[in-house]
Image (cartoon, rainbow, N blue to C red; front, side, top):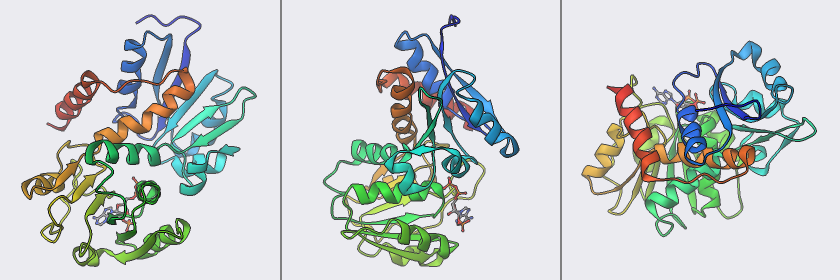
Length: 288
Ligand code: ATR
Protein backbone atom coordinates (compact mmCIF):
# COMPACT_ATOMS: atom_id res chain seq x y z
CA UNK A 1 0.00 0.00 0.00
CA UNK A 2 1.30 3.46 -0.87
CA UNK A 3 0.12 6.42 1.18
CA UNK A 4 1.06 9.73 -0.39
CA UNK A 5 0.75 13.19 1.14
CA UNK A 6 -2.62 13.51 -0.59
CA UNK A 7 -4.21 10.50 1.09
CA UNK A 8 -7.74 11.08 2.42
CA UNK A 9 -8.00 10.24 6.13
CA UNK A 10 -10.67 8.64 8.31
CA UNK A 11 -10.61 6.36 11.35
CA UNK A 12 -12.47 4.90 14.29
CA UNK A 13 -12.39 6.34 17.81
CA UNK A 14 -13.01 3.87 20.62
CA UNK A 15 -11.72 2.80 24.04
CA UNK A 16 -10.53 0.12 23.64
CA UNK A 17 -10.38 0.09 19.85
CA UNK A 18 -8.12 -2.90 19.14
CA UNK A 19 -11.10 -5.30 18.75
CA UNK A 20 -12.71 -3.11 16.06
CA UNK A 21 -13.10 -4.69 12.60
CA UNK A 22 -13.74 -1.29 11.01
CA UNK A 23 -10.08 -0.70 9.93
CA UNK A 24 -10.05 -4.12 8.22
CA UNK A 25 -13.36 -3.42 6.51
CA UNK A 26 -12.65 0.14 5.31
CA UNK A 27 -9.06 -0.55 4.21
CA UNK A 28 -10.30 -3.57 2.20
CA UNK A 29 -12.68 -1.23 0.35
CA UNK A 30 -9.95 1.41 -0.10
CA UNK A 31 -7.68 -1.25 -1.57
CA UNK A 32 -10.15 -2.88 -3.98
CA UNK A 33 -11.48 0.51 -5.10
CA UNK A 34 -7.94 1.83 -5.71
CA UNK A 35 -8.45 4.95 -3.59
CA UNK A 36 -5.70 7.09 -2.13
CA UNK A 37 -7.00 6.93 1.40
CA UNK A 38 -6.35 5.34 4.78
CA UNK A 39 -8.56 4.40 7.75
CA UNK A 40 -6.84 4.17 11.13
CA UNK A 41 -7.72 2.91 14.63
CA UNK A 42 -7.73 5.80 17.13
CA UNK A 43 -7.56 4.64 20.77
CA UNK A 44 -9.07 7.62 22.58
CA UNK A 45 -9.95 7.50 26.30
CA UNK A 46 -13.16 9.17 27.51
CA UNK A 47 -11.08 11.93 29.17
CA UNK A 48 -9.49 12.83 25.83
CA UNK A 49 -12.50 12.32 23.60
CA UNK A 50 -13.62 15.94 23.28
CA UNK A 51 -10.09 17.16 22.43
CA UNK A 52 -9.53 14.34 19.93
CA UNK A 53 -12.92 14.78 18.24
CA UNK A 54 -12.50 18.53 17.84
CA UNK A 55 -9.01 18.00 16.38
CA UNK A 56 -10.29 15.87 13.46
CA UNK A 57 -10.82 18.78 11.02
CA UNK A 58 -7.53 20.42 12.08
CA UNK A 59 -5.71 17.17 11.28
CA UNK A 60 -7.34 17.01 7.87
CA UNK A 61 -9.60 14.03 8.61
CA UNK A 62 -12.68 13.65 6.40
CA UNK A 63 -14.41 12.17 9.42
CA UNK A 64 -14.50 9.12 11.67
CA UNK A 65 -16.55 6.37 13.15
CA UNK A 66 -17.23 6.50 16.87
CA UNK A 67 -17.69 3.35 18.88
CA UNK A 68 -18.09 2.24 22.52
CA UNK A 69 -18.08 4.18 24.85
CA UNK A 70 -18.22 7.47 22.92
CA UNK A 71 -21.46 7.39 20.91
CA UNK A 72 -23.52 9.54 23.29
CA UNK A 73 -20.69 11.98 24.02
CA UNK A 74 -20.24 12.42 20.25
CA UNK A 75 -23.92 13.28 19.93
CA UNK A 76 -23.57 16.12 22.46
CA UNK A 77 -20.31 17.44 20.99
CA UNK A 78 -21.40 17.64 17.33
CA UNK A 79 -22.85 20.96 16.13
CA UNK A 80 -25.03 19.38 13.44
CA UNK A 81 -26.88 16.07 13.25
CA UNK A 82 -28.75 13.99 10.72
CA UNK A 83 -32.33 12.86 11.43
CA UNK A 84 -31.31 9.38 12.62
CA UNK A 85 -28.84 10.76 15.17
CA UNK A 86 -31.50 13.12 16.54
CA UNK A 87 -33.94 10.21 16.94
CA UNK A 88 -31.46 7.86 18.59
CA UNK A 89 -29.46 10.57 20.44
CA UNK A 90 -26.23 8.76 19.60
CA UNK A 91 -23.65 9.23 16.85
CA UNK A 92 -21.54 6.50 15.22
CA UNK A 93 -20.36 8.45 12.16
CA UNK A 94 -18.74 11.90 12.07
CA UNK A 95 -18.43 13.89 8.88
CA UNK A 96 -16.10 16.93 8.93
CA UNK A 97 -17.81 19.56 6.79
CA UNK A 98 -15.76 21.96 4.64
CA UNK A 99 -15.99 24.79 7.17
CA UNK A 100 -14.70 22.48 9.93
CA UNK A 101 -18.12 21.84 11.50
CA UNK A 102 -18.63 18.31 12.86
CA UNK A 103 -21.80 16.62 11.64
CA UNK A 104 -22.92 13.63 13.71
CA UNK A 105 -24.81 10.89 11.92
CA UNK A 106 -26.28 7.59 13.07
CA UNK A 107 -25.92 4.83 10.51
CA UNK A 108 -26.68 1.99 12.97
CA UNK A 109 -30.39 2.48 12.18
CA UNK A 110 -29.99 1.95 8.43
CA UNK A 111 -27.29 -0.67 9.13
CA UNK A 112 -29.74 -2.83 11.07
CA UNK A 113 -32.70 -2.28 8.75
CA UNK A 114 -30.63 -3.10 5.63
CA UNK A 115 -29.15 -6.18 7.28
CA UNK A 116 -32.59 -7.43 8.34
CA UNK A 117 -34.17 -6.77 4.93
CA UNK A 118 -31.31 -8.47 3.09
CA UNK A 119 -31.21 -11.55 5.29
CA UNK A 120 -34.88 -12.02 6.16
CA UNK A 121 -36.90 -10.18 3.47
CA UNK A 122 -39.48 -7.43 4.03
CA UNK A 123 -42.59 -9.66 3.92
CA UNK A 124 -42.06 -11.03 7.42
CA UNK A 125 -41.35 -7.64 8.97
CA UNK A 126 -44.15 -5.26 7.96
CA UNK A 127 -47.04 -5.44 10.43
CA UNK A 128 -45.17 -7.88 12.70
CA UNK A 129 -44.85 -7.90 16.46
CA UNK A 130 -41.17 -7.70 17.44
CA UNK A 131 -39.42 -8.33 20.75
CA UNK A 132 -36.18 -6.43 21.40
CA UNK A 133 -33.95 -7.61 24.24
CA UNK A 134 -31.84 -4.86 25.85
CA UNK A 135 -32.26 -1.10 26.07
CA UNK A 136 -28.79 0.38 25.47
CA UNK A 137 -27.63 2.48 22.53
CA UNK A 138 -27.83 -0.45 20.11
CA UNK A 139 -31.43 -1.16 21.15
CA UNK A 140 -32.41 2.46 20.41
CA UNK A 141 -31.11 2.09 16.85
CA UNK A 142 -32.80 -1.31 16.41
CA UNK A 143 -36.16 -0.03 17.67
CA UNK A 144 -35.92 3.02 15.35
CA UNK A 145 -35.20 0.64 12.43
CA UNK A 146 -38.17 -1.60 13.32
CA UNK A 147 -40.41 1.51 13.41
CA UNK A 148 -39.09 2.49 9.94
CA UNK A 149 -39.76 -1.05 8.66
CA UNK A 150 -43.41 -0.73 9.74
CA UNK A 151 -43.59 -3.27 12.54
CA UNK A 152 -47.00 -2.98 14.20
CA UNK A 153 -45.89 -3.63 17.77
CA UNK A 154 -42.50 -3.58 19.52
CA UNK A 155 -41.90 -5.00 23.00
CA UNK A 156 -38.63 -3.98 24.66
CA UNK A 157 -37.46 -6.26 27.52
CA UNK A 158 -34.66 -5.01 29.73
CA UNK A 159 -33.14 -5.73 33.14
CA UNK A 160 -33.52 -2.03 33.93
CA UNK A 161 -37.10 -1.50 32.81
CA UNK A 162 -36.82 2.32 33.09
CA UNK A 163 -34.36 2.31 30.17
CA UNK A 164 -36.83 0.31 28.07
CA UNK A 165 -39.56 2.79 29.02
CA UNK A 166 -37.35 5.74 28.01
CA UNK A 167 -36.90 4.23 24.52
CA UNK A 168 -40.62 3.53 24.25
CA UNK A 169 -41.37 7.17 25.17
CA UNK A 170 -38.83 8.77 22.85
CA UNK A 171 -39.46 6.60 19.77
CA UNK A 172 -43.21 6.56 20.18
CA UNK A 173 -44.91 6.65 16.79
CA UNK A 174 -48.63 6.89 16.04
CA UNK A 175 -48.62 3.79 13.89
CA UNK A 176 -46.53 1.55 16.16
CA UNK A 177 -47.24 0.38 19.70
CA UNK A 178 -44.07 0.27 21.80
CA UNK A 179 -44.18 -1.44 25.22
CA UNK A 180 -41.52 -1.62 27.94
CA UNK A 181 -41.23 -4.91 29.86
CA UNK A 182 -38.95 -6.36 32.52
CA UNK A 183 -36.23 -8.90 31.78
CA UNK A 184 -38.20 -11.71 33.51
CA UNK A 185 -41.07 -11.13 31.09
CA UNK A 186 -39.02 -12.01 28.00
CA UNK A 187 -40.46 -15.52 27.55
CA UNK A 188 -44.06 -14.26 27.83
CA UNK A 189 -43.23 -11.35 25.50
CA UNK A 190 -42.75 -13.84 22.63
CA UNK A 191 -46.49 -14.62 22.64
CA UNK A 192 -47.78 -13.51 19.22
CA UNK A 193 -44.35 -12.25 18.13
CA UNK A 194 -42.58 -13.26 14.91
CA UNK A 195 -39.36 -11.24 15.29
CA UNK A 196 -36.83 -11.41 18.14
CA UNK A 197 -33.72 -9.21 18.27
CA UNK A 198 -30.95 -9.53 20.85
CA UNK A 199 -29.12 -6.26 21.47
CA UNK A 200 -27.58 -7.28 24.80
CA UNK A 201 -24.03 -8.54 25.17
CA UNK A 202 -25.30 -12.00 26.22
CA UNK A 203 -23.99 -14.67 23.84
CA UNK A 204 -20.87 -12.69 22.96
CA UNK A 205 -17.48 -14.42 23.37
CA UNK A 206 -16.67 -14.43 27.11
CA UNK A 207 -20.29 -13.66 28.15
CA UNK A 208 -22.99 -16.08 29.32
CA UNK A 209 -25.45 -17.35 26.69
CA UNK A 210 -28.84 -15.68 26.47
CA UNK A 211 -31.45 -17.83 28.22
CA UNK A 212 -34.76 -17.69 26.35
CA UNK A 213 -37.18 -20.35 25.12
CA UNK A 214 -37.79 -19.87 21.38
CA UNK A 215 -40.49 -22.57 21.21
CA UNK A 216 -43.43 -20.08 21.19
CA UNK A 217 -42.16 -18.48 17.94
CA UNK A 218 -44.13 -19.75 14.94
CA UNK A 219 -42.39 -21.21 11.85
CA UNK A 220 -40.98 -18.51 9.60
CA UNK A 221 -40.16 -16.23 12.54
CA UNK A 222 -36.97 -14.17 12.45
CA UNK A 223 -34.34 -14.29 15.20
CA UNK A 224 -31.64 -11.63 14.87
CA UNK A 225 -28.55 -11.09 16.99
CA UNK A 226 -26.46 -7.95 16.67
CA UNK A 227 -23.55 -9.83 18.27
CA UNK A 228 -21.07 -11.11 15.63
CA UNK A 229 -18.36 -12.55 17.89
CA UNK A 230 -19.02 -15.49 17.58
CA UNK A 231 -20.64 -15.42 14.14
CA UNK A 232 -23.15 -18.07 15.30
CA UNK A 233 -24.29 -17.22 18.84
CA UNK A 234 -26.09 -19.89 20.91
CA UNK A 235 -29.32 -17.93 20.25
CA UNK A 236 -28.85 -18.16 16.46
CA UNK A 237 -27.93 -21.85 16.66
CA UNK A 238 -31.12 -22.55 18.66
CA UNK A 239 -33.18 -20.58 16.12
CA UNK A 240 -31.70 -22.52 13.19
CA UNK A 241 -32.41 -25.82 14.95
CA UNK A 242 -36.09 -24.85 15.18
CA UNK A 243 -36.17 -23.95 11.47
CA UNK A 244 -36.44 -20.21 12.16
CA UNK A 245 -34.68 -17.54 10.08
CA UNK A 246 -31.41 -16.68 11.86
CA UNK A 247 -29.88 -13.25 11.15
CA UNK A 248 -26.31 -12.68 12.36
CA UNK A 249 -24.69 -9.38 13.33
CA UNK A 250 -21.87 -9.19 10.78
CA UNK A 251 -23.99 -7.76 7.98
CA UNK A 252 -25.09 -4.88 10.26
CA UNK A 253 -21.42 -4.02 10.81
CA UNK A 254 -20.93 -3.87 7.04
CA UNK A 255 -24.12 -1.96 6.28
CA UNK A 256 -23.56 0.69 8.98
CA UNK A 257 -20.08 1.30 7.57
CA UNK A 258 -21.11 2.01 3.96
CA UNK A 259 -22.72 5.49 4.33
CA UNK A 260 -19.68 6.85 6.24
CA UNK A 261 -17.27 5.51 3.63
CA UNK A 262 -19.29 7.15 0.87
CA UNK A 263 -19.46 10.49 2.75
CA UNK A 264 -15.67 10.58 3.36
CA UNK A 265 -14.30 9.11 0.17
CA UNK A 266 -17.04 9.92 -2.37
CA UNK A 267 -17.89 6.41 -3.59
CA UNK A 268 -20.32 3.77 -2.35
CA UNK A 269 -18.39 0.63 -1.39
CA UNK A 270 -19.54 -2.79 -2.65
CA UNK A 271 -20.42 -5.81 -0.52
CA UNK A 272 -18.72 -8.81 -2.08
CA UNK A 273 -18.37 -12.47 -1.13
CA UNK A 274 -14.63 -11.80 -0.63
CA UNK A 275 -15.34 -9.05 1.89
CA UNK A 276 -17.73 -11.20 3.91
CA UNK A 277 -15.32 -14.15 3.87
CA UNK A 278 -12.41 -11.93 4.93
CA UNK A 279 -14.37 -10.64 7.94
CA UNK A 280 -15.70 -14.09 8.85
CA UNK A 281 -12.20 -15.54 8.73
CA UNK A 282 -10.90 -12.78 10.99
CA UNK A 283 -13.73 -13.22 13.54
CA UNK A 284 -13.26 -17.02 13.58
CA UNK A 285 -9.49 -16.73 13.98
CA UNK A 286 -9.78 -14.40 16.97
CA UNK A 287 -12.70 -16.18 18.65
CA UNK A 288 -10.86 -19.51 18.69
P1 ATR B 1 -24.94 -0.89 23.62
O1 ATR B 1 -24.67 0.58 23.48
O2 ATR B 1 -24.07 -1.75 22.75
O3 ATR B 1 -26.37 -1.21 23.48
P2 ATR B 1 -25.09 -0.90 26.49
O4 ATR B 1 -25.67 0.47 26.47
O5 ATR B 1 -24.02 -1.22 27.50
O6 ATR B 1 -24.47 -1.29 25.09
O7 ATR B 1 -26.30 -1.93 26.65
C1 ATR B 1 -26.14 -3.27 26.97
C2 ATR B 1 -27.52 -3.89 27.20
O8 ATR B 1 -27.33 -5.26 27.58
C3 ATR B 1 -28.31 -3.24 28.31
O9 ATR B 1 -29.67 -3.25 27.95
C4 ATR B 1 -28.07 -4.17 29.52
O10 ATR B 1 -29.09 -4.15 30.49
P3 ATR B 1 -29.18 -2.92 31.58
O11 ATR B 1 -29.73 -1.76 30.83
O12 ATR B 1 -30.10 -3.41 32.63
O13 ATR B 1 -27.77 -2.73 32.07
C5 ATR B 1 -28.03 -5.51 28.81
N1 ATR B 1 -27.31 -6.53 29.58
C6 ATR B 1 -25.98 -6.63 29.77
N2 ATR B 1 -25.68 -7.72 30.54
C7 ATR B 1 -26.87 -8.31 30.84
C8 ATR B 1 -27.26 -9.48 31.59
N3 ATR B 1 -26.35 -10.24 32.19
N4 ATR B 1 -28.57 -9.78 31.66
C9 ATR B 1 -29.51 -9.01 31.05
N5 ATR B 1 -29.21 -7.91 30.33
C10 ATR B 1 -27.92 -7.56 30.22
